[in-house]
Length: 200
Figure 1 (cartoon, rainbow, N blue to C red):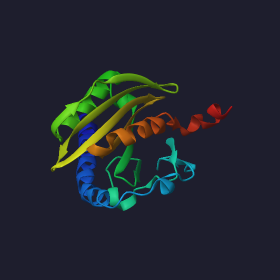
Figure 2: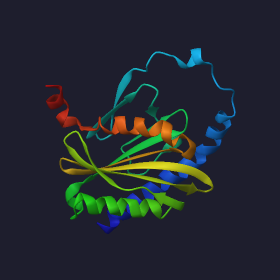
Figure 3: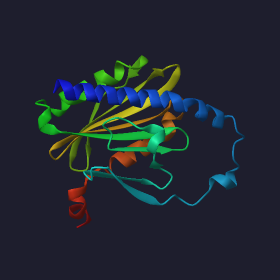
């Protein structure tokens, strides 16, 4: 458990570093002239399903999200997505029995690791929620990483035999814009073996 916990800490550290690296490009885009009202009223983006590399999990997001690829390689993450505007998300899954603790304690462990690498962090209240049939906890954390102000929304989920982390983040000034979208995507999380069951 100690070895695996270290791997998780390293993965989370990479998430934070990659976030700060992308902040400069986001700020540059913010300086561009705003688009007209006619340009903003585009047709809704189509939904697209994304599956983790190990085939264990899938989530559904609009087609403006894409796999981050080499630009955002995160150790232990089985899926990393990005979207224009600086939004990012990463999925990490762990076999539940590698951690002889309840989900609430697992959630606390993840939050401790996150806070260790964020300067001036401020955490909101942790909420117990349900994502379909899955028990979960959701927490918002804001703070700075290498001077870049970021907002994180962290979901810790008990899905079948697994504990899953869905880590979502964006620039602090885009938090209100992206938070509802993070929630919508989190609600689509499924074990791939259960996709047929929900379709019925």
